[in-house]
Length: 110
Figure 1 (cartoon, helix red, strand yellow):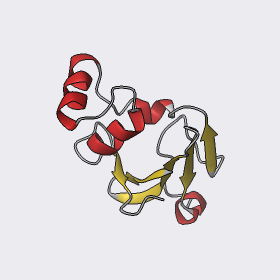
Figure 2: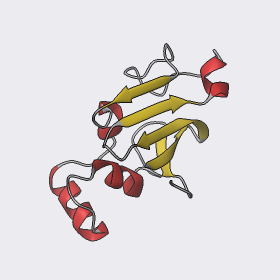
Figure 3: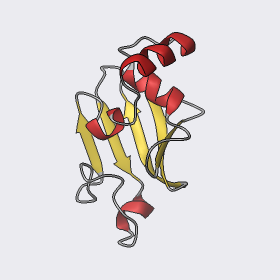
């Protein structure tokens, strides 16, 4: 299992997990989910549910990745398989993303 913290404008909003079977889970923190003043991190992950599950990387997080030649170059420089979207997300979405959301690898993945 690999896990990452998801931040919205620098505040911890939730957790993104890749399970061993390549399924994914996004979970809003209790404090984020119950606070009506805090927004959803995306239109596709509204605060109607606290936990989302998927058999592929959620499109919102996939959209944070580079495309085309830039992705190929990043994968080559970072020595990441081009099909390892979660690994690439962890390596590149911790800073300088478009929009308010950043994704930071947890220090202690299980």
